[in-house]
Image (cartoon, rainbow, N blue to C red; front, side, top):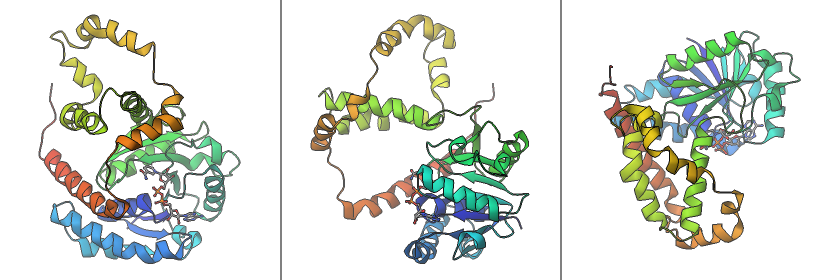
Length: 311
Ligand SMILES: NC(=O)c1ccc[n+]([C@@H]2O[C@H](COP(=O)([O-])OP(=O)(O)OC[C@H]3O[C@@H](n4cnc5c(N)ncnc54)[C@H](O)[C@@H]3O)[C@@H](O)[C@H]2O)c1
């Protein structure tokens, strides 16, 4: 049974632990916080039994048994074949963690970071084992959203990237390869473009936050759950992508001349958005997160029963 060491037992670490354990891996997870280590088994049990209700996990108790919470990083990576780092999104912490990981992890193992925006070259350059390090950026929560962005530093060995790709495919994820480092990788750059425009449109009073969300929830998002933007425009003109560009690109060019700038995130605009936003109170976040996960699990189950277009 292959072994993965998971560093950090927060949102992403616990979720990765379930992804690997579901696929038959033995998981050793640790966290520097004793509270996080103590809370992890209960949270993992709850999430695994929730997934079982949707048919995404067959034997939740057996999966849970494959996950062991250990006291420190050295124990987590002892004998590991793969490491998934899920510590805080801070450059200095990643640097410290990777120094310790490179020292303690068996030399044959790949070391992947879940980092959302910090590229691997910013915290692996000085390591003896830098060729085995890469970013494997998931989407929250990876046990329900399968895409994972793989991005090496300039010194990451191509064989390591290929091996990581096989590992993630093998555990049921959908890896995409980012060919060279770029801040935000692909997913958060796409999300950032959308979010900046959302902040601009709501902040300048063109639409309410609820109707902005409805535009995605009941509009673009329906297609996006099974097609990307290129596939979308392919079908939005009779002659495909080239025809779409001929018809509509003039409009998009005009829009692109005035992109939403950093000011949309400034204090004045944020205040306007917060005043218009009716979110759930903090004590209901947990309940809303479970609701989201149940909806995602149902969507994942639905997607598993559907065929892709075979052209
Ligand atoms: N939350 C998201 O939407 C999301 C999505 C994709 C990627 N990520 C990335 O995943 C990583 C983890 O994010 P998260 O959302 O799970 O954060 P989180 O705050 O829920 O969890 C981080 C955990 O790391 C622990 N930790 C801190 N220092 C540590 C150390 N030295 N050793 C071991 N554990 C340590 C903390 O106690 C905490 O439990 C970050 O790099 C983040 O950018 C987050």
